[in-house]
Length: 125
Image (cartoon, helix red, strand yellow):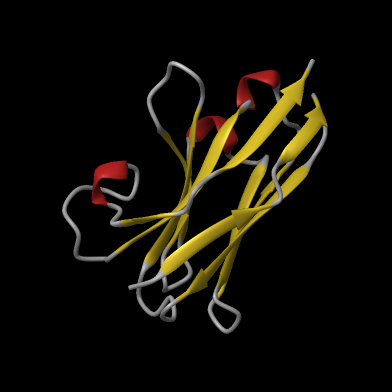
């Protein structure tokens, strides 16, 4: 079973940039789909981005052009480059993994079977 650990969160001003990293241990990424989600206080966890083992990437519409997900299968890491951050981006960001054959879509957190502990991102206005 793979374990995921996020890092890179912090405080950033609106319009700034931040890069989150997620490192895996226990097994290699293999064919797992890797995703980033976020959860703000009092809100549901929502999809941010995902990357399949074939190299395809997916983004929440509001993040297209601002966020970039990258996975390095050799290093067993996945990162999320976030630019032009907005105050509404304040949340705990989670890294997650799912099997390609899991039910549901890559946008649904229910299909992900492994989660990191999360890293806090705070965007000040």
